[in-house]
Image (cartoon, rainbow, N blue to C red; front, side):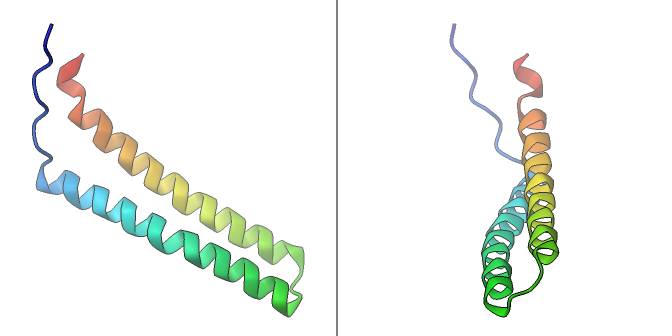
Length: 78
């Protein structure tokens, strides 16, 4: 059984994937930078947890976007 080739992504899907990529690319360095600055300045650990939770929220947001695009593209494969 051969699988049919997938349809190319729509413009909306491409925008969503681009948004997820931008969120990941921006969130990770900011997370590392905020953690590093907090350590250098001796800020309380609650600020580190705040940065961690903000980064987790950004990564979860990107994951949900990518999962939704993946589901849309695989709708016809079932």
